[in-house]
Length: 430
Image 1 (cartoon, rainbow, N blue to C red):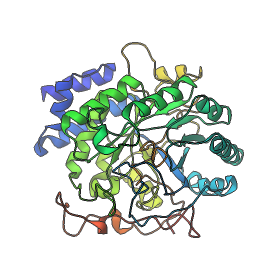
Image 2 (cartoon, one colour):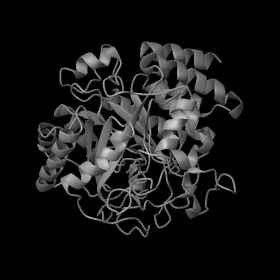
Image 3 (cartoon, rainbow, N blue to C red):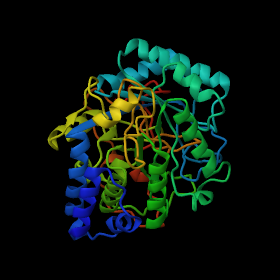
Image 4 (tube, helix red, strand yellow):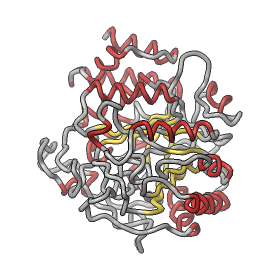
């Protein structure tokens, strides 16, 4: 296809495709899908080889959020039967993080529900970051706490944070349909605060909330303009008890097209497959690794993912390798900028999506939902605990017995609420 050849050429040169080209990727047919994946794979391999970065979420505070984000199981008024608990102690969070590090994660993402942190919360998270870094030399830490006030990003960086996550989630035009208690501009402001403090800015989207192709392209172009260092792509997990419980619009093929479009628009960025990959990609997850270079390991914030060992086996079976702690995630042209303490995404030429860069450690971002669920890495279904040892794959990771859910259905059997890991007496993926 001439379209794909053009997109590959632009991706290898880090050029921005036209909106028409981005929309055309989303409009390709199933017969063209493997060609789309192969083309995006060429761009991915140019900048990231066959490495897969593993990230690990620790849910520091779960549920009871005052924000009304429609996608979120932790939202105000949510009837989803999720875990609810207040702040983990620094030593508890560090112990939880150790499971992910043992499984091969090089980044730990610390997430807390809520509109945004108080200054006391920032101090608490700072102590947690210090505890994790004391026990895990070279580990990257990303904070994901919601909307930031002036000075808080700087304090997190001083405490040792490498990155801050805050997703845009959807386009500016449709944002008001998803959330009423804060604005799209609030989210943009927090990403900019993280950048200004020298933190690696991580910001992404949630697909599957009923948005149009134009909305998807709008938010991805906005992320490129914001110069996010990492772009997590979440696929809505329609929790029973939330306003979007019936929004089953995604197929594995649709998810692959969305990932490919993100890769073409943000060619040398760390594209992360985040919340919902097991529910929506299912048996086609290995194909997605040819597009994205980063995943979460194990469980999510409020839902269960497939076992950590299953993730590791999938990576190996697909011919990829886990990115080691001593390897920079960023391509060389970004690593040099990142080492200077910037966001690592201002390599020469056009404005680019960043590629995730914590000061000398590579990248440290995470995949989140934003204020209300504390930026909720993974759309409140985001990963929370990963397995360091084999375990059975939960029902949520398997293909549904009845095939793809139809829009308008509630399919609670496809979503396994997290009952293990942080905030529980059960080991992750036990």
